[in-house]
Length: 173
Image 1 (cartoon, rainbow, N blue to C red):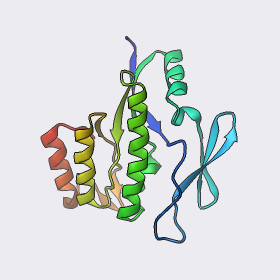
Image 2: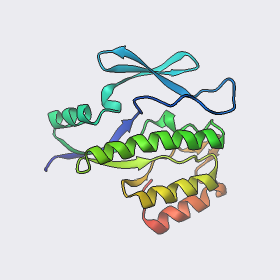
Image 3: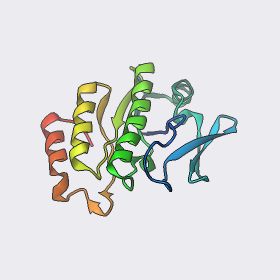
């Protein structure tokens, strides 16, 4: 197949599992269908953003790609899904949901999609564990990270082990 490669293609899960954490007032998202293939991402009962079905539906995404000559998309989390404000356990749970969605989409269209996963950057030791698992997975070519996690710039020494691992393995950020 010939065509362009879209490296800026964000994914949002079609739904989120019910929050199972320990915080009473948590910003764990949920999805609310609103018709015409759109869903609201809800945070604490309020609409955070409205997204199209191509955010989670690989068939719809492929149709959109074909209509504009895109051969491959590199799927990555919508930046707000990185959830650096969550505690480590909740961030890990969110990473599992989002990375699972990306992996399923890559499985559904392996020649058309590649994946960039997410790690709980606010817990660097756990971020390394998730990165190692993604590297073994084969459906991920790298991870998406923000410029800081809770005010700590990515150049901070606490993230050195994550960057050391990525450079040794050739995984992309």
